[in-house]
Image (cartoon, rainbow, N blue to C red; front, side):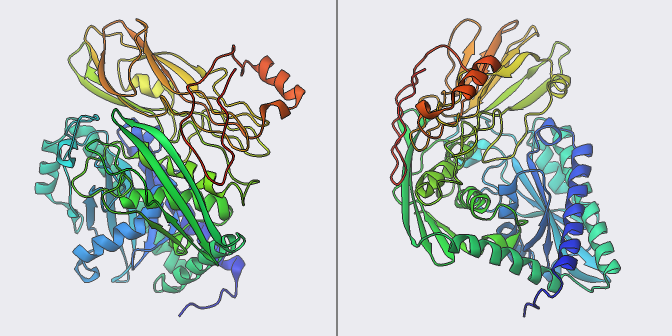
Length: 559
């Protein structure tokens, strides 16, 4: 039974304290991690959950959509390891894409919190590992080729490393020191959460988190249902197309059904699963459907398990948004990140003041460089960099800002320190934002040089090469993405190639879509764009092939 919130201020104070504990744990992980993926690009999450595995507090950095999966992940882990089997100091890990966050490089870790001898909570993290073995490219046609699959296994038992599990994992990866260093950083974050959770219970004179969790879940559930309830009942639809893989373009059909204080998002009609890495498991599809809806309908309330109780996400099994095992899923973000665009296009008629046009980083373009430096030392570097966000009714889109993910680009200094590569430039890409009454955010150009005497492998995982980020309400699409070698050769965005010694490559990230007709943009803003260098000589995009229902069909951009 949930006790009414008689002291909302006191509840907020306690809630803020637990959120601060997860933030402190996240800071610990950032300071102790070995790879730049965590330290610089924030590809992680930290949560504190109740005894049933339902999130109570989440770190305010990291990937919000990952946090949305932690409750369902922990529920499945608890089926394998029931609560009465846990000991203080245990940690269970898994990277099963159908249980965790959708692809093998993300390793989830779950640990118990004991207080006065009783199991009272769980702490959880997910972090993108710098290596998981396998073939880190689009060439794999089944999951096993993409790396080592870890079912839920104990990595720590009563505080001691399960050496067999550690040995098995590290024998199957290339960068064993970085992989283990990052796992120890996750364990350090769990230690902080455990300590702060026990202090919380002691200071507030509580035996467990049951009453507190019930109240904060009620708060978030009520807030989200209120936001949904403000929408008119009905079915809102949109569809979009993306590049996909040659011969297998990606098609997304999205129906958003609002019934009272609940909403269902259904993807029936979307492309069938493919023998390529662009498949998005249903839990990843759920995460990248629920999170965009949460920030649209209830942006101000903290997020936890209660935020998602009123949202249902469905997709037929065997589709690209709900593939059957053992489909390859390494680049699942190339499908999952598109879902926010479809949802916002569908809801544009009823929420024109809140939705944004498509973002150039939906989906994100990732580039992996790997090789051996001139001293014979292997290196691997994942470039996380951001495209332009879509514009809204009242504001220009943010330039070089991640959405719907929350990953960061990291500093060039840190990237160069972790590899022999030279970053020659990193600058805004003029003219890349879609024109409109409100301009789409700009993408960026990054030029990378290989100064070594050996070739460097370059793996591209991207989209929006032929299908730009669409505008809304008559706004133009943004510029498409492209990658060009210094020889002038254009490199496909889903490919494995080599960067020759002394050669460089320019990676151009897509721009966001515009909002509203371009002819309605105020003259002073046009002048400001020109003075700031945001505009570029006239050019044309490839015609967008996406179609939407329930939102204006964007025009072909001509600048």
